[in-house]
Length: 164
Length: 167
Image 1 (spheres, each protein chain N blue to C red):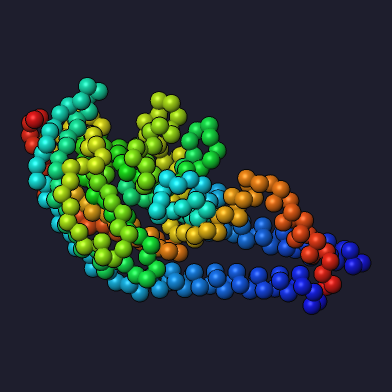
Image 2: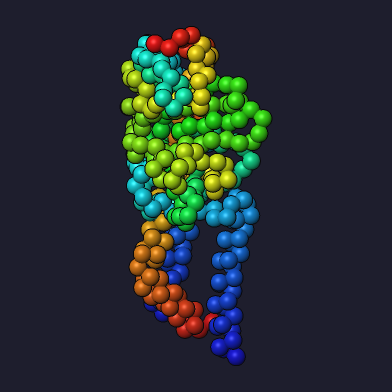
């Protein structure tokens, strides 16, 4: 009886975390509403380990906005600023060029070979807010998976051994 | 019930919740700031204006940029990112925005500035439409907080015109 109760409370914790995550996804309209800054290319504004809150909207992309995009073939999202926009007269097509604040060059060398511009479909979201340092937890857990296992087992142990 | 692990867990949860609350309040306090920035941009000289081998127009110009952005800074501001972009319309494109210069303002004291500079980034068109083109110069600023919501705004200065002929 006590075992099922503990299993239930563990299940409740996991489910509520998942519900909060999904709700965030609905509210901000993105696939991943929070992203961790992995490189120093936007310093001193964003340092490695900061997290950014993203938002998608149908508003057109304009220069100065900080966007998160995926280059085809790579799955690490890049967070840089838009420095050039060329929008066509009749269609919704837009050519976008980005650059990291502390990089000297624009991002053309990051795009796939032969690609000179980004399109709105590459953009995952716009950064609207940020929290410093919080992303280090994710970076440590990704780069040293051992810590992730230790943390999860300690959490599981804590729930199971609590008296109620 | 009163084990060390249990107490440590309760303390940690409480601390994180309070921290999150303080960050949210810090960000909300930025909304009470009503900024009144001002700026002026002059084009001192068109250095050169050519059609490049790949068929696109390119221009190099020297600008005089003055601005007073001190009212944007609050206690929760980490830095202000400021940049100047040229905006114009062509037959093919309803909007073109090209960033010409940017800078990072780390503190309030640096926010009142005067700078004379050539364009930091290349002003290249998609095509050959720049001769005699009228364009706006906009000063954009991006207030990046120590924590929380970022604020963006801009000042549009219109009435600039590119030369009719290449030089």
